[in-house]
Every structure is written in C-alpha cells, then in structure tokens.
Image 1 (tube, helix red, strand yellow):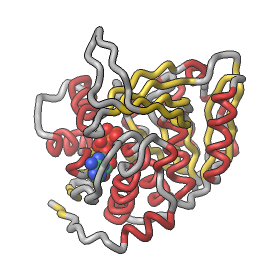
Image 2 (cartoon, protein in one colour; image 1 turned 120 degrees about the vertical axis):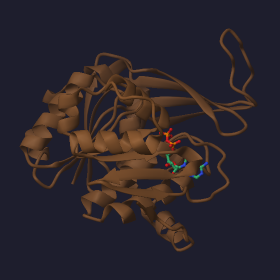
Image 3 (tube, protein in one colour; image 1 turned 135 degrees about the horizontal axis):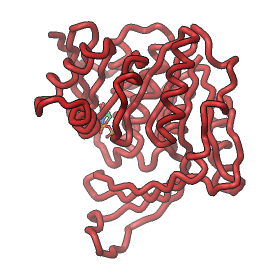
Image 4 (cartoon, rainbow, N blue to C red; image 1 turned 90 degrees about the horizontal axis):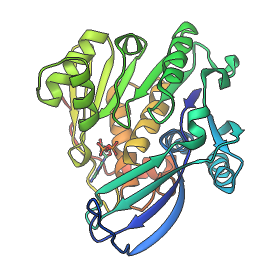
Length: 306
Ligand code: ADP
C-alpha cells in the first residue's frame, strides 16, 4: 500500500512562445485548467500504474477541491482528504515552446495539513509513504517518524527545493531530487560544490539511504549501498515536462511497493515520466499501466552500473 501525504493544487496552465521576464506581460497561445499538485500528481501516477494508493491531504470547500478529489478517484486512488476553510491550493504554470516551465504556487489549504490527519491504520510495515515539499515541513518530518516507527518504507521527494534536517534524512529510505534540488540540499548540508554523482554518493553514504537524482532529458542516476546506477531518459518528442518528476516519483514508489528491484523501478519510472512529457498538463498526461507496459516493449536502453 502507498500513502501519499502531500499537496493538491489546481493548475492554471498557460502555453507561451517564451516565458515572461520579471515585469513583463505576455499573451499566451492557449490556456487550460487541470488538477495538479505534487502530492496528488504522484498519487495519480502510482494509482494509474495499479498501486493501492491512499491520498492524504487538504483542499478548500470550493469547486477546485471537488475537481481534485474527482480526478484522484477516477485514477483509482482512495481519498482521505480534509475540506478546510481555506482556498484550495492553486498554481500558475507557464510553459514555453521548448517545454520549459516557470511555476508560482499558492499553497492555501495545503498548509492546514498536519500529521494528525493521517489515520494510524494507514501506517503499517507494508506501507510505502511518499512525501514532497509543498506542505508544512514539520508535518512531513512527523509523518517520517511515524512511518518508520510502524516499520514502513519512506520515500521523500525534496520538491520544490528545500532544506531537510539531518534527522529527517535518517528516517528516509529513498530520497528523490532533481539537479537543482540536489544542489540546494547539498549546500544546506555544508557539502562542497561537486558533480551530481559525487553529491548523491555523499548524501547516500552519510544518511544510509538510496539517493535518486533525476536529470531531465538526460535521465536519472541513483546511488544505493555504494553502487551507482545510471540510465538515459527514454526518448520521446517532449512537448511539456510538467508532471514528469511527479510521474517518476509515483511510478517508482509503485514499483518499490511491489518489491521490484531498484534497476527495474528506475526503468519503469523513466518510461512513465517520458510518456508524461508527450502531452500538456500534469495529471491529464500521466500514463496508465497499459501505456507504460506498451512503451517498455520498445525500451532498449542500457543501465550502467559503477
Ligand atoms: P522535475 O520535473 O522534477 O524537474 P526532471 O526534469 O529531472 O524532474 O524529470 C524527471 C524525469 O522525467 C527524468 O528523470 C526523465 O526520466 C523524465 N524526463 C524529463 N524530461 C524528459 C525528456 N525531455 N524526455 C524524456 N524523459 C524526460
């Protein structure tokens, strides 16, 4: 079972020729609204890949909250969502012609989420807890403590970039970051500037965890128990990378929850993340298990280990 404890946001997605600079107003080519939020996206990704997913989070008593809950339910996730007297979290997502994005998030109801909202029956030795950084950090650290006390697996995606105290890293089994998030975390931990592989190896060793670094169109690297695994991205014509990182996290957690080995989990998660880049928006472009299975038949990438 996977418990996603995290954010739900309604995304306002603007497709632009190029992203607006500070102080600039630009006309977008198209607009679309879509359910999103890192927590909800990851829950949808894991559920569409067939995992038993429980989403714990907070939304407002508004129509955006209704849409977010309906999207999770349609994907097969169980909703343990509180409705609170704050607006549902919203994000303004601008995507340029190259698929690059710039995002502003108003967390709203997400900040009301606390560890008390997590029913104790969800935390067992067979639970994989999946966390991100769009809620109050203390709530995350408390859930990490409770999840480990119950004997479960913990997966922390440090996105958006933030600082994780050393004692929270001790409670983390799998850490997932992109390159920028890795550099922010490494600086906060007082590490010297170094290449992603060296930083990941250092973090993995210091905190006895598996450190996974997603590298956008360059794929992924992972360091686990002293072994480095490197896998290129699965080649697709990417038009919008929004949701790629979340799809990666959700599908990776789903694979680990099925006790698939790390190498196979990385392969499946990168295929799913690449498929997500082929359509606009976050949740609408997250693939199903069938779509991932079909694409995996065309996967000829070599996983390199060091
Ligand atoms: P985030 O979206 O969190 O910044 P990344 O950009 O690193 O994360 O993307 C997460 C994963 O999505 C990558 O490890 C890769 O597997 C996949 N991905 C991202 N961009 C592309 C792309 N252009 N083509 C194929 N796969 C991609």
